[in-house]
Image 1 (cartoon, rainbow over the protein chains, first blue to last red):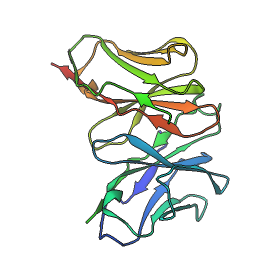
Image 2: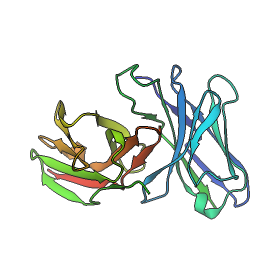
Image 3: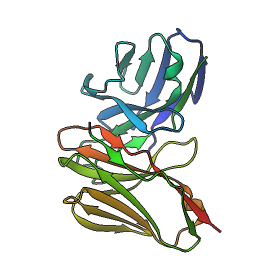
Length: 118
Length: 111
């Protein structure tokens, strides 16, 4: 079963530092996403990315956040100046064009990166 | 604000029983509905998806959708202790690719 791979699994950073979370989506997928989940809370949408540009973003995804697909395989989330409230589990997800693959447009989530800002 | 509501639980059922998990959503334009299972500290794992009104069965799982009532449910038959997890309902609108998640229902299956 193809997987979405995320690195690192856990990152500890000091407040104000920049962090880059990395994801390798499933190879034939076209749509890429970042979600986050603060401990004990809902999974929240951050951003979607298609055709090398952001297609949708939430209010959470402010100027401190950016995404990039620097090559054909990696998809990254950068937080420029981390705050304590950025501490959360960050999930990357990908999916194929609707109607392809398994016949559903559900996402495949990566195993997540736990970001701890101290 | 588009919302997805779930009872947080925990829902406790004995092994072998049927577990019934419910979800309501606010956006009438929602088109796709998903149930994810999430073990503590892990990522969501897709269990079922449903697009049309009615029931959809896959093994021990049945998803039910009623768009008129804006209601989605998941039935788990012959519940096993390994089914103990948080079950997340997620909804996708017609014009958006993002999923909106509920807060999840914690299911405990007692041996």
